[in-house]
Each structure stands twice: as C-alpha cells, then as structure tokens.
Amino acid sequence: MSEAQVALWWLPVGAGGHVVIHTSRWWELYRARREGRPRRPLFHAALEVFTGQGRHVIEMAPAWGRSAGSGGVVATGPVGLDWLGRSRLFRYEVRCLRDGEIPDRAWAPTPPTLLSLAAPEADALLRRVASVPCHTWGRDAVGVGEMWNSNSLVSWLLQTSGIDASALVPPDHGSAPGWAAGIEAARPAHPGAPMEPDEG
Image (cartoon, rainbow, N blue to C red):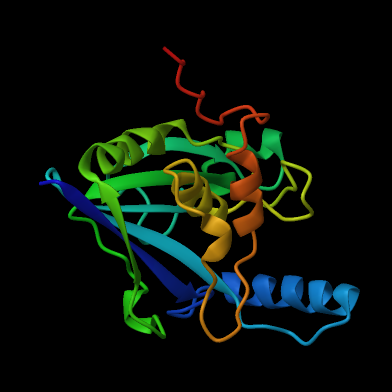
C-alpha cells in the first residue's frame, strides 16, 4: 500500500447531548465578547487513519463516561489543574483504537476532510499518538491564548505529519478551540515536538 489516508471529522461540540455543550457555549460567549465578534459554532475534531494495519480512530476524551476504558488508551493527562489529575474524574484519555467508533459522527454537518500520506508517514503518525504532550486540559499550555484539548491533539498530529493544520478549518464558519495550541506545540522549540531528522 503506497498511500494511506487520514479522515478529519469536524463534530459539533455537545453533539449527542453532552454536558460539555454548556461550558463550551459560555467559553465561546466570553471569547466573542472579548474579541468583539459574533458567536460562532464550536467543533471538536477526531481522526480516522487508514493504513495497511487497518483503520484506527484517534481521539481525546474524559477518563470517565460512556466510552471510558473502551480500549486503545495510549496516554492520559490532567483536567483543569495538575493536582486534580490524581482523580479519574479530572483526567482525560488519549485513545488510538483499531476499528474504533466515533460516537458523534452522525452529527457531523459535512463529510470528513480526506488527507493523503505516504504509508510510512501514516504508520509514524499512529506511533506518535502515544508521544503527544499531555498538557493540562483547559489550560493555556503553550502561550497562544487557547486551551489545550482534543483539538490540540489532532492539530499536533497533523502538523507533525507534515500537514499544514492551519489551513484546515471547521465548516459553517465555525471555531475549533485549542486548534492553534496543537500547532504551536508542534514547533521544535516546544517540549514534546518531534526531533528534526539528522542531516547526513
């Protein structure tokens, strides 16, 4: 298989009736007022990666709830404050699950954005999921004025795969909080960014 494919799904925040829709709306209202603009629909991203190893779903989600412990957990991190992460209620999971499901896919307003990678690059992306910086969810971890969250994971993976994540935007003139944080974290100056290959 000479090429592999990555499907980037944009999913409305709170799809399926999750409680997070309320906190996200408050966050967007605050940001819109501070920036003097209308409110925008919010989206979170999920990835499907198709390689010779099969199909894998990559996402970040709370370490509790309907999908917690569903398998494929490769990393965890704290939510809100570092010390709160000692409790499962304040931890998130990074998952890379073969033949996994994206629970909110039915609410996606558009088909996924399909991105091509060479097979070795796609395999490297899957291996790199476990190496994502596990910053505190909800904090401005890299100094760009955005919270670290599931969107940061996705944009970090794409950016470190040689894909210009800044050119990928959600539908309906929407916003993806945390997207810029992942891009910034992928820069070589930040801890957790992949090392540049040696010359010669």
